[in-house]
Length: 603
Image 1 (cartoon, rainbow, N blue to C red):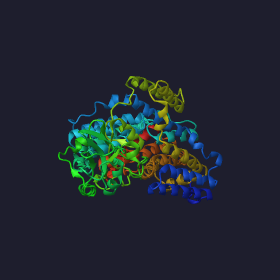
Image 2 (image 1 turned 90 degrees about the vertical axis):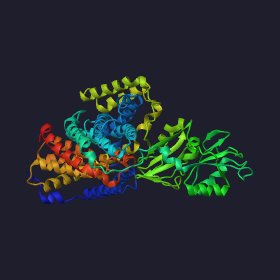
Image 3 (image 1 turned 45 degrees about the vertical axis):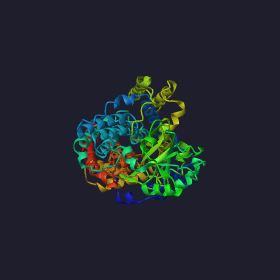
Image 4 (image 1 turned 120 degrees about the vertical axis):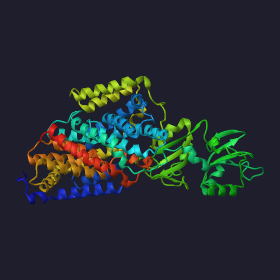
């Protein structure tokens, strides 16, 4: 079957191929290292490729106007519009029922997550359902760790079903249009992706969750109960040296002792926030957050007394202020920084009350601790600024923040606009990017989405990644690099049936997606699949479908897909916990997908 492929042709490389493979190797290595953000790695590689004349300067930024890049950006905006309209809440508001069995809960949440992620960004779908899942776990008195991983996997599976469900599908459809003359349509992915999603959901709901190690992230407990031992009241005695000074003057000794000043009680009235210019009086009560040793150091240094009646929790948390739990994603403003360095207190009148990392609570030097992706932060902030603070930090709240921003009267209009666009694109009446662009325009005109917020919902690092990787992928293809990879894979399966070669491509793609960004994986693997089919003289569509499913099936690690990273902290998982349920799920996806592909998309 590989008579046309000779060993010499398989392994000989041109200078351009050597440079491109070295460049891609560097990109993949830096992505695995994780020190630098993926968009900066990809953009840097693009600039190097231009300097080396591997990518023509005139084509350097062609990826930013590529249909795949535009569709990904538009899908993010449309997803935000559906949320703001209340359309998603219409589906999720009945889900919290702690009386259901765990299997039934996972099946219902996973099913809803799968359906949502088929039509909106799957990271957004998880972000919407995660607070619901955690609320249910709290009511049921169990750790959210047993249900968050199944929910993440189901939202990933759901994205396989439609063209707009996940970026790899959008990329593969665009590559098919460029190389074969016609893109995949909206529901061309449904037979294969739908079967993989359905079987995967059944496995996760009834068998897979039993493989998850029992872990307690602490998220399922009442945060106020955890805070109580660390909140105290100190009173200012008569003739104390701090009387008459400003509250801001206490910042330095408080910072030195690792104490957070939460507020002040005067004449029975609580004043939230540091109130930096407030003059202190005898009898004022300072409400503080600190561990016992730090509190004693601060009290001794300023010669303060313990308040006679301890109502610290009530003094610190009451009307006008709220506690909010937030998980830190990769692109968060505070990721890699400290609360002190970004000015969380003076910019947003917000105090960092706690950090949970990999299921453990950090108890000292909170304001000076460098925050990591996956950390869970406990914040005390003004109630009317809760949403603003979380959005400013770029985090994901782990509790339902209410419906203050929704436009309930626009729900059915939002669904109607989106449904009409999907139908028109599916029937080929309107080009998909145009259809989604019209939806965004309709959302703005009908005030479902404020014009001022449109760009806030576009995930710019993903746009930069796509815009940078698309020219690099095109250069690899034009240089014959994808043909070289394809011939190598065919050489390894020489003498075996074509479906074995298809399976090998799927396994290789899935392995790359587990450790690399799935978008980058799809950009490289899709042209390889087309070249393999051309070399074998068979239909390329089965190979593209195999790449589509495999690029999305990243279940072995927390770094393969953003959804897996988001649940790392709230679920209390370790790096090695994912493969326990993820490995049998990936094997099952391959076992189901290959026969389905061969039936629906014959070779």
